[in-house]
Length: 261
Image (cartoon, rainbow, N blue to C red; front, side, top):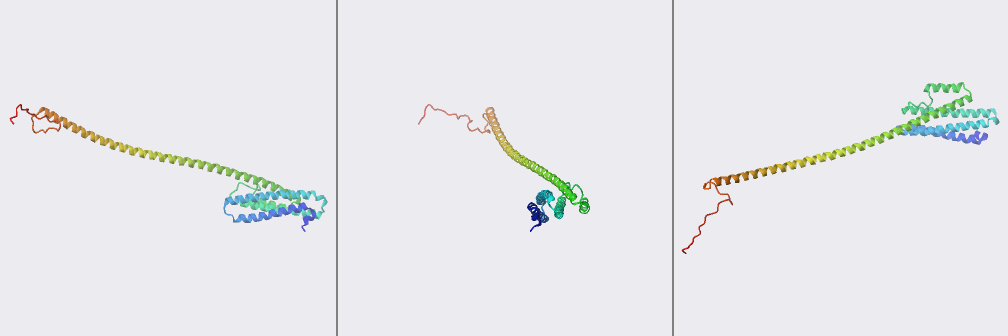
C-alpha cells in the first residue's frame, strides 16, 4: 500500500498524477532526441513545457495539502513529506534544465529560462542541496518555477510573433507572385499585338507597292496611246505608224449610181 494513501488520499492522488507527468516528460525527451526536424522539435518542446506547467501546479497543490495536514502529522511524517516535495522540485528542475538545453540547440538563445547562465544555476543547486533548509529549498524552487513560467510565456509570445511575421511575409510573396504573373500575361499580349501589327504593316506595304506598279504601267500605256494619237494626227499619211485598233479612220467607199450587171 502506498504510504501516502495512509496519510491522505488527496496527497496520494496528486503524487500519482505527478509521477505520470514525470514519466511522460522522460518519454517525451527521449522522443525529442530522435526528432531531426526543427519545427517538430519546437512543437514537442511546447508540449513538454505544458506538462511541466501542469507538474508545477500539482506540486503547489501538494504543498498546500501538506501544510493543511501538517498540524496533525508527527515530525517523521512531516519530514518525509518535505523530502518528497524536495525530490519533486529537483526532478522538475532537471527537466526544466534539459528543456533549456534543447531550446538553446534550436537557437533560442534569447530565451533564458532561469535568467542566468548554466554555471550559476549549477552553483545555486549546490547551495540549495547543502546549506538551505527544506522550506527555503521549496520556496526557492517555487520561485524558479515562476520564473520558468514567465520565460516560457515569453518564448511562446516570440513563437507566435514569428508565426505572424511568417504568415504576413507569405501573403506578401503570394501577392507579388500574382502581380508578376499578371505583368507577364500583359507583356505576352503586348508582344502578340506588336507582332500582329507588324504583319499587317508588311501586308499593307506589299499592297501599296503592287498598286504603285499597276498605276505606273497604266500611266505608261496611256502615255503611249496619247503619243500615237498625236503623231497620227500630225502625220496622217505616214504609213510607218500603224493604226491603233478602234482609232483607224473609216475606209472610203464609193456608191455607184449604175451597176452594169
